[in-house]
Every structure is written in structure tokens, then in C-alpha cells.
Image (tube, rainbow, N blue to C red; front, side):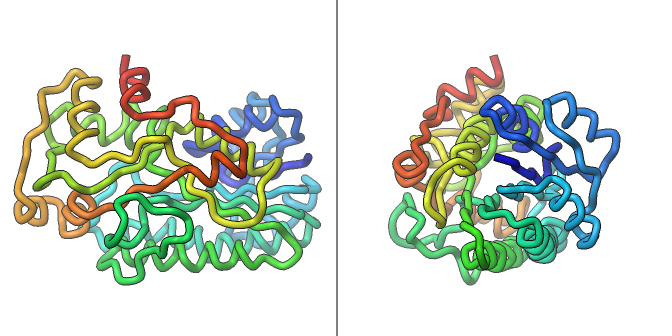
Length: 311
């Protein structure tokens, strides 16, 4: 198939493009930068240097690629997330709303029959089951910057799932780890754990679901090739509370055992949303993706993945 990957030079785009090429697909990868376009070409794909907010140029690029499938992997998150910054999600929110509309329009004009979209598996409501399925509702009342981010997610997912004339699939990825991610060897979270700046908050009961970027890319290749329209959690097999995974990450990084801090202090130092994540976050089940996309993560648990990444 002919596949157009928007965001080909991003954390997931980098492993995704060569995997699609290896699977026999004809790939065009978009990036805004000519300097990054060369890496797309070296991965075996054609590069399109285009801004998703230039709707006419984007449409021309997708039409030139004669895309059967469009894959939306665009985000604009900073290297370090600070929930106290009111506009921390603003660039990504725009990509998920205006950018998605433009991509859907371009895909429709090119006659694409399938649209794959990146979402997140850590925006479920903080009540009920500790591990959520795709049928569970997303947060609708989150405060601050994250609340705005979830509203943009809801808008994006709704557009994709009702896309006219196309099969729309939403992949809710877990927290990425691996090269080029916040939890990568050179990422901000690993740097924080080495400085003992990633404490366990309160009881550390917030449940996190992780996914190695290579496994996320494999699941995306599977979604390009098969699977009914709908939402899929793309996570590893072991959702885990913060109290379990932070010490394992610290040990893998050669750091001292993490400190524990009360919730009130976490709110003071990192903001209310960071404290809420630590105490109340819900994990996500990957059973549907494994069953319907016929996919298995090569890194089934972060316990092994963290050690391999940092060895």
C-alpha cells in the first residue's frame, strides 16, 4: 500500500517509517524541515517537506503520494513537560484539532481509504477500575493545561472515527520509552530519576501504562494493514503503580532509590496535575489491540524494557 506518514521525523515516526518500508509499503514521510527530510529518505521513504497548517500544500503532498493510508503522528511537546505552564499543550492541541482537519481533508482528496491517528492511553477518568478498556470514558473535567489537552483529544478522536469514506483507527499509545522519548536514555524523566527529582508521591498509587516506541511502531504497521475502525490501546502487558515502576527505573539508571513525598508537597512543587497523575492515574488494557490487530509487544513489560534501554 501507499502510506503517507505525517510526523515522520518524530519519536514514533523514526522507527515507523523503516518498519513500513520493510513490510513492503511505498512510504512518503512528511516533515517541516529539509534537514530532517534526509533521514526520511535514508530510511527508504520519499520525503515531503510540508507544514500541516498549509492546507493546500498538504493536500498536494498527500495527493502526489497517492496515499491509500494516512498515518497521523504529529505532536509538538517540549522536551520537559511542566503542567504549571498554561500553554504547555497549546501547539499539540492545535495539531490535534486544526492539523487533523487538514490531514483528513488531504486524505479524502487523495482517495485514501484508511486513516490512523495517534492518541494517548493515559486520559481515562480517574474512577472505577484501575485498568481501563477502550470502552471506558476519557476525562471530561480535568483542570488546567491537561484538561485542555483532553478536550483537544476528544475533538480529534471524534473527527477520525466518523471520517467520511475512510476507516478511522485511533491508537491510544501508553507512555513512550526508548530513543527520542521523555523516558529514553537521554530523556528528561531519566535525567530526573538520576537526580532524585522523580519521587514517589504519597502511596504512589497512580497506574501507568508504558510502551516501547519500537512496539508502538509495530502496532501502527499492524493497524495500517488490518483491524476494524475504532479505538485501540497500544500499551505493554503490565500496567503498574508508580510505587513499582519508579524504583525499577532508578535501579536501571544507576540512581539512588527514589524519595517519597506527600501529595501536598508534590502539588506545591510540580502543580496539581502532576500530583493527580501520581496518585490517581489509570492504566490501560492492550487486550483488544493484541486480539484484533494480531500484535504482540516485543517488550511485554517495562521491567525488562527499562533495563535493556539503559544497559
